[in-house]
Image (cartoon, rainbow, N blue to C red; front, side, top):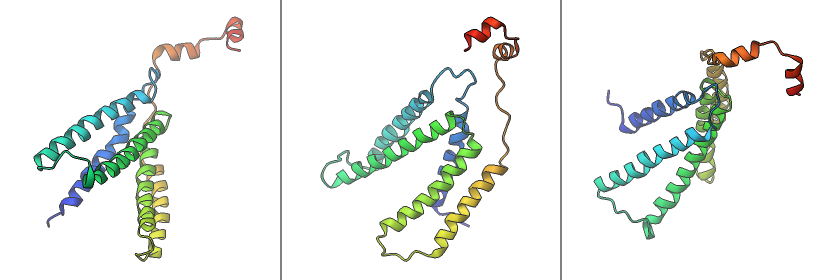
Length: 183
């Protein structure tokens, strides 16, 4: 059985994006030494390297022109719009994960929700020219149920242990002076 090339690339995307959340969760540390935007800057740098530089190299290898003017402007305009949505999605996802969301909860919402948004956007952009099956809405409702099932039943690890000094200070008896200072 031969798997079509688009399916292989879609599976590659699912693999990479499925690992995105767990990988990004590795940037969380109990000491909270930095904001969620420090890892996001790393994400931006990766986009520059892989998307911009890689895209330019691939364009050159395909013999494409480097012009984004005239008839080529639509590629730049819509590409920039898609990149903006991707970057804003990455920012939102980063913020969700860095503000306490667990990958086991956030990622099913992101990907199940993305499937539903794509379906609704397709309905809207078809301008009524394509018939919408009622099964689409059943599928969207089913996706919501699937998101809940996957989120609830995915194993959740224990939170990272706090550093020893935080644990000791939390367990230390509080003096009268400490309680006045903390008020």
